[in-house]
Length: 78
Length: 78
DNA sequence: GAAAGGGTAAACATGTATGTCAACTTTATA
DNA sequence: TATAAAGTTGACATACATGTTTACCCTTTC
Image (cartoon, rainbow over all chains, first blue to last red; front, side, top):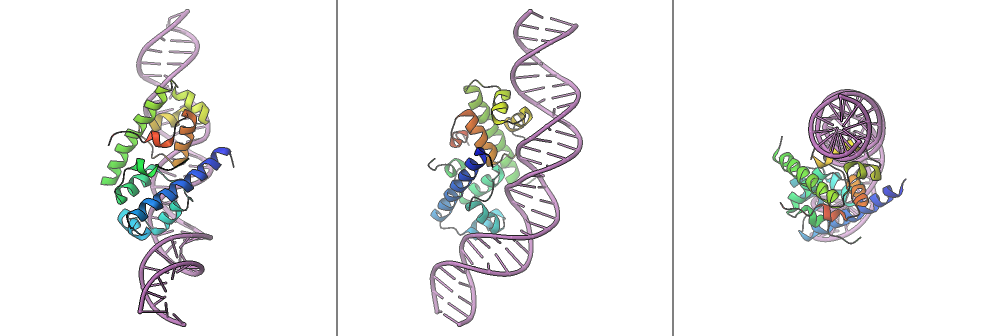
């Protein structure tokens, strides 16, 4: 486990929290977002809990589903 | 090739251009960044040319190497 | 011309994100 | 209690990002 890996996991968690925050702000359930994205709810849960090294494609899909800019998903502290 | 895929590829290209812009602003070559990240220069070239669905880990690594916030990498139009 | 630096590209291996399903917990509501 | 909705987790399959090597194209500089 390198330092970069630790930073990555911390970042995954913060991004997941931010995605959850945006989702809840739009009053959407994980299942709502999953269904709009045509993802399984498992995927949304994994992302919000910082258990995945998310790809740009997934970020684009989530941002479209929640009607926000991707840059807004990166608007968090640290 | 779905509409989402087309949006993704357009996004990959814009992000790649933005990464290149930031790198050149710091007067770094692709090889410089690759060496700091411990990546092969092939990887940097693929990313800047929008040929890869980049992961968060790679974004974190590039941002650390170029000493910018990840959010700055998403600061481009559209 | 030759050599070196910067960038691009194809091919293959490996690791892992996501797809998918099943089972579980938690919370709310009746 | 029980019923349902929301969320979590584990397991396995598939697709693809990245690691790596090799080879190539441009410039520039000698």
